[in-house]
Image 1 (cartoon, helix red, strand yellow):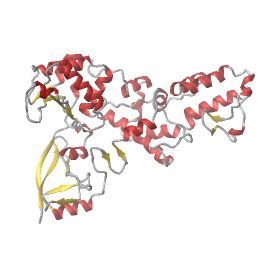
Image 2: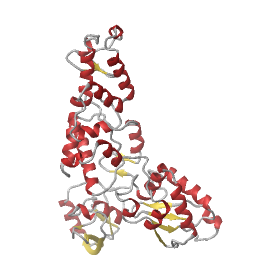
Image 3: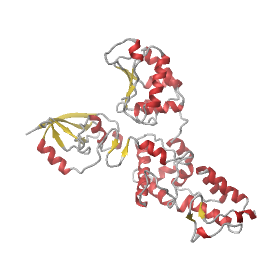
Image 4: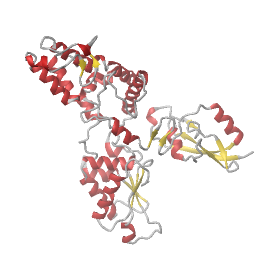
Length: 422
């Protein structure tokens, strides 16, 4: 009977054992039973297994896994696979079953425009998009529930997200009302949609002006055709009812048409963490915690970088290349710091506690040329690369600091969202 030696991974802390591949969809043994492959025929590697390992405790994230090799027979694999439900395979460029490919970021950029923070679009005001066309209300609310779970899990795991939620939305998530009075309601609308906010503020400031009767406005939510009341499209806005129009607009935008999304988010959050956690910080503090583009990745500068960095395989902390790298990283602007962190770790942000809490630690190793040549010309001709699974930066021994800076900046700007420089 064909058999293969295969690893089983066990967490050294919670003792959870995961048979590699049961959640990744391994279905067959090939090459005469000498190796196992995924549903697509792609060979599975240890990074795939680690990606699907489920720990008994959420605090085991990043805990080293002990590998034990076992002998698996083809008949046993077939039996096991038949008992395990099919689930999405872990791929580098595609999340199978979700339709999320390497072009997802491009599609997302086209579908989401939130320069003033993410805020729910009122239900009933949803134009078709590549990501939402055909989505039912239940699917929409499921996404907000997932978003709540994501934020809660990140808090439990002490991870920082890059999620720019609008401050008014954060106030709603905390259980606050945005409808205290008209002035505050219009201020909240202006926060998420400045152009609409200015228009509504103009109507409120000139609510006694007879010119309102000639504006051709009706009781629909601007700038859409969503009615604010029964037969709203046929009801004109006049000086007699403009305040009612503004009140209905504010109530729809800030409460009734987005309440289901807010409740879904809170329900998702509550499934992982207590809801009262949301009230422990102000909305402004939550905004800084979830997405602060101005935050320095290493406010301690060069000293913080040196204390957290590990050098190996050709480099020590006294190496010339490491001294140059530390200086370059310390001089980067916050936006470039975030790009560097994403290039090396796959995430825009470091964990809570900064660079020192990164696990595995930021490790810099020497990258050799194809023929292992050590000449300056050969080193200067290649680019740095990274292994995001292990937070490895593979850095050639460049002949000058300027060349290193140029190559590194090129990589962090051009090497995002791909594995071409891994």
